Length: 167
Image 1: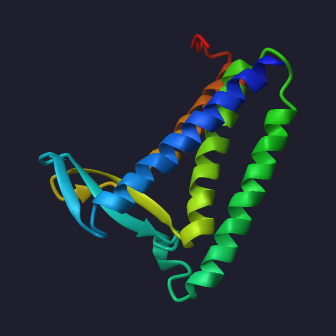
Image 2: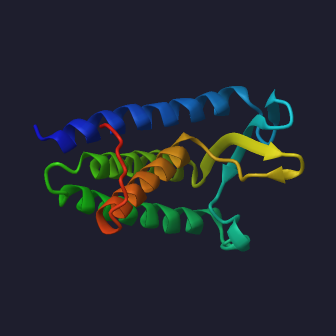
């Protein structure tokens, strides 16, 4: 089994399982649209459902079934494209393989929500004073970390930036 498979499989299994387990805990124990202060003035656990239409009010007037089809289709396409790039990685690209694996795990976790509910369960709420970062979940963290790793790979390969991260 190649190294990239040894990176992908545990990330997918553990990442998706953790994402879905944390979302299930929120669904069971936190009332919808409520908040539990964890670090006063900085962090709450919340329970929100994100249709994916909050950005600029896009698709806000669409029925949930239509939004579900749009985002399930888009997420599936993204998964296929990212999997293709992962598949085409040459040997020795462990950092890129890790980045793609994290993106796939996060996209798959959110895709499961989209298929089940038509929306994504978000529960991490960071803020400072009156400035709130949009609520997010573990899948979103994996996607951002994966994208960040890919940016580091690109910088290292195109700009000669010395980025040493042991993998």
